[in-house]
Amino acid sequence: MSTALEQKLNWLEQQGHAQLLTKIQHGIEKEGLRVDRQRKLSTRPHPEALGSALTHDFITTDYSEALLEFITPVFESSNEALDFLSDLHRYTYKHLDGEQIWPASMPCVLPDEKEIPIARYGDSNIGKMKYIYRVGLEHRYGKIMQTIAGIHYNFSLPEAFWPVFQDYCKSSGQLKDFRSAAYFSLIRNFRRYSWLLMYLFGASPALCGSFLKGESRHLQTLKEGTLYLPYATSLRMSDLGYSNKAQASLNICFNHLQTYANSLNRAIQTPYPPYEEMGVKVDDEYRQLSSNILQIENEYYSDIRPKRVTQSGEKPVHALMSRGVEYIEVRNTDINPFLPLGIDQEQADFMDLFLISCLLMEEREISTEECDHICENHERVVNRGREPGLTLICDEQERSLTEWGSELLDQVQLTATLLDRVSGSQRYSNTVEKQRNKLKDSSLTPSAQVLQLMTDNNWGYGEFVMHQADLHKETLMSQPLTDEVEKQLSKITQDSIAQQLQIEATDNVNFDTFLAEYFAS
Image (spheres, one colour):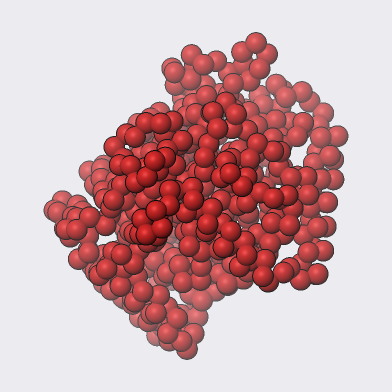
């Protein structure tokens, strides 16, 4: 495997730079549906006591008015991010008026599709744009696919790391260009090996029958109203999850920032006949922001994204091109229904190890053929990952998942050993060992444990998830918010409402003009 990884780790340690790997910047975004006691999707508006979904820094909504999204600030310690996420849950629970937060990726009992409420963001132009974008998603893909929830793990190396790493790589040129190229190398290796994360942490092997509107597709029935695949790891990340036929032909290239940006720009500017047939504005009502393959950059779905914080009015792709990649957003993480937050310290530690290793492994571009193999491996693991004897495509040959996974963990262990030496602990090696045990015994994976608990208790999907929801609420609320944190969050909430009102009061053009100016910029 990667001698490059070992060489770079040795160099970092010998030159006294290994400490930089302990200063990673972390942020976590976590979604969760609001549901009632009958395990049905809430049709209530976003609670006013949680502030403005448009302007609140930490509590907002995703596609649906019922799909909460918690966003942590950036922290050097993943533990601090998890603690902040805990506080957001506690604060929210106090204002849900009997509703629960659904602690799983695949949704609860869904109503008729037309009754799924789209998120609202007020009457400002930017608020209307966010709403119409979601109306466009409805017309393009349907509402049901947009009720899936997940966790986004944001990761970046400290600024002090990059000049050091550039020196090691003997790279001249601007630092921002070097940093972007290095992050794209991380992305490529992540795409090659992220099937391992699906095996280890995938937690959605079953779903409520309402998600498929009574169809079964290729799934089996576990109990009336519950569908599953016996060896699946993550149906959320399968073709049952968020999919886009129009995007299938895009061939977004992750080899270079320039080709990635060009691919996205082309998709945003290229009309797509089925979307043209829908119309953009019909009978004075917007159906979508545009009739192009993508309305905006965020519509492109990928399990990992290069990111840069945007300035006011700036488009994400323009921010990337002008200032380079700032951080990586990992988007393939299922909500683990056994964990109060859906993710814990052990998983965050492994994510750090895996991403550092992907960054320091060999730099190779992905060919069209390898891209096809990556997609095939992904589909095999999300649908059949725990199947005994499963093989994946490695260097154009079939290879045992467990054998290849063990080899990858050997590489991740090199990173863990260095971080343990720097931190004076066994914390990182311990998490690698726990993942190695899952490779040896698939019954230890979250996906297997979900099916086992449902079978043992004769539970359907909804019964299982609601049982976990009640447990998690009890666990989190047993440690109440401090007065200081509650006051801070209350002030942020009230300020967000005032900020939305101010935005609405200062709009000085109509929406048609606003939208035209946005796309022309």
